[in-house]
Each structure stands twice: as structure tokens, then as C-alpha cells.
Image 1 (cartoon, rainbow, N blue to C red):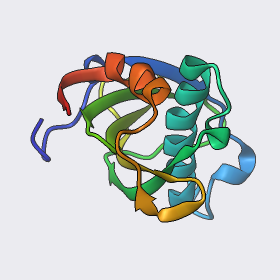
Image 2 (cartoon, one colour):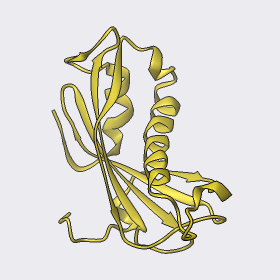
Image 3 (cartoon, rainbow, N blue to C red):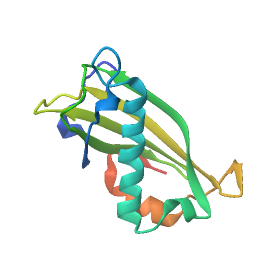
Length: 151
């Protein structure tokens, strides 16, 4: 997908509904930028918890966020819930590249799309990437690959 293409629901594999809260809106009445990033983090980590069956914080290698970004297309905000779509573009030996689309209402096009990169590091030495990442993580994310690559 080119950077100029606005993503649609068909671009994502896994779905989660996230409730918006009154405090999520900023002074202008739309979702605060930091809240978008919280939703990206929630979509990724909730998927990992549900599909690994383990507390991912207790693994000997933990995923740290190495990169995030967001493309904004239209405003969203309280009180309607947000649907997050999740897809994986790449599974490397120690990293995963996710994309998360945020949708509100029945719109087919995303209101925003995030890019979120996890790098797996030793839980006792976060400066050191772990190769390979834990198998339980790889098994949980490879089904999310669509048009991407596994390494």
C-alpha cells in the first residue's frame, strides 16, 4: 500500500472494539493525539495476550516499542467506540512491524492508521535484541501477515 492510500477495513485481519472516554477528547472536541497511540498499544498487546495465552511481560524476551507513527485522515472522539483493525507487515528474527487502523461508525475508510514496531530484547538487558524472538510470539503474529513477509 502506498503512503497516500487511505486504508479500508479490508486491509486488516484481527479486530477489537475500544471504548472511548470523555477524557480522551482534547479542548477541540476530538480525540487527543496521545490517545491514538494508547489505542495502537492496546490493539497490539491485547492480541498478544489473547493469542499466546501467557503474560508477555514475563517472557525472557520482551517486546519494546522501537518505532511508532500515525497518519490522521479524519477526526474521531467520544462517545462512540472505536474499532481497531490489526495487520502485520513483517515478522523478522527479532522484530515485528504492525499496522493498526482506527474506525468509528460504519465508515469503510480508516480515520487513522498507526505503524508500530516491536523489537524483542532480553528482559534483563533491554539494549540487546534477542534472536530469535520467542516462538509463542511468532506463532501469535504470523496469522496476521497479509502481503508482508516472515523472516
